Amino acid sequence: MAAEAGPISKVLIVIAMQKEATPLVHKFNLVEAPAHQSTFPKGAPWVWYHGSYKGLHIDLVLPGMDAVLGVDSVGTVPVAVVTSFSIQTLKPDLIINAGTAGGFKAKGASITDVFLASDVAFHDRRIPIPVSIVSHFSYMCCPGVISILSLEMSKSCMCQTIHN
Image (cartoon, rainbow, N blue to C red; front, side, top):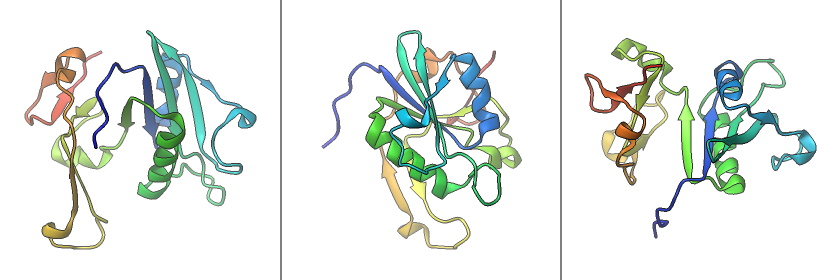
């Protein structure tokens, strides 16, 4: 059963790397939640920033640093785990996964390109599998997002560009 659409008041932004998150933290004047206030499991390296901007409550989460390697915990597993936990505990109305198209440069994508999707397909890209068994999900499209965000259509109807 699908949830009823209502006004958006809580936004969850998920980003894999601190370097990508820092500009948004500053732009929205977000503050890092102290460990004792965090809803994250004790010992999890995840980072949680929160605050308000133009009437919206914004939560920004990232998987944090790998304790062994000392680098950002990028990749599908760390981001999926922090995203899943954040959805369950923070209960956002809208989820924005930012910084996920770095591999699309060869296809003509650039920084500031925005991809709006109405379908999700997942498979482990290192394992060749037939298209017929790829996990595929459709979900509600966000009507009006292109005009609300003042996006321009690009060469692909999925790719929009934000101009600052």
